[in-house]
Image (cartoon, rainbow, N blue to C red):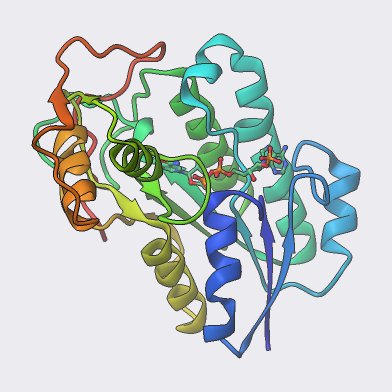
Length: 260
Ligand SMILES: NC(=O)c1ccc[n+]([C@@H]2O[C@H](COP(=O)([O-])OP(=O)(O)OC[C@H]3O[C@@H](n4cnc5c(N)ncnc54)[C@H](OP(=O)(O)O)[C@@H]3O)[C@@H](O)[C@H]2O)c1
């Protein structure tokens, strides 16, 4: 049996691993949420790692509120930077392979073609900077790691995300104003979690940086259209293009990742 620790287990990605775990009878999971394992607390991490002889740790724990990170960057850094450093050190000490999730928001969005793993990150918001800090700690501390950058992550059934917000509004018959000023690749948590578990099962020894998305670029407007039509609702009366939509944090204009 391959033993896997999943941190941040109550987030949308963590919950997706829980949903699909029965499809992987050779994988033995321990799921710990933020109360059971706080990645900013070294004692809590030690306690978590002592539960078993883990082979892998999938770190789904993160501070993911992009606008709030702009207002309170120290908290974002504490989790996405220092917390990830703690996890990398614990993995080194316990000889555990770390699988960590990072983001398209490490890039500035100025490129006109997909970002490759060779492209130099240049985050334009505090969330992206804090996630980049986490990536750097892992690369400094560990040899055996996978950092998987993904984008526009959503679960159809868990958490608060664009997919679920748009669907709820459409079901309510609300007017939905959406921007078309950003382009990225929406990624279903099911596909990402299956990709990660395949990496584990195939004993991939190609460690390092990966880009994984569902590989279909959308604007938020196009994505909203496709969510509404996928759910057999009519977008024509509900959906309005909003060119004045502004958020507190800057977001990359174009953040399509070239998958590898
Ligand atoms: N969502 C996206 O669009 C997106 C895009 C690209 C990459 N990512 C990355 O994908 C990963 C998974 O994201 P997600 O969408 O599943 O996020 P999520 O739903 O916000 O889940 C994050 C989880 O981390 C937990 N957490 C926060 N602080 C923690 C701490 N100090 N110790 C332990 N756990 C802590 C949260 O627990 P509480 O709720 O109890 O605080 C939450 O359950 C993250 O690394 C994120 O940066 C996300």
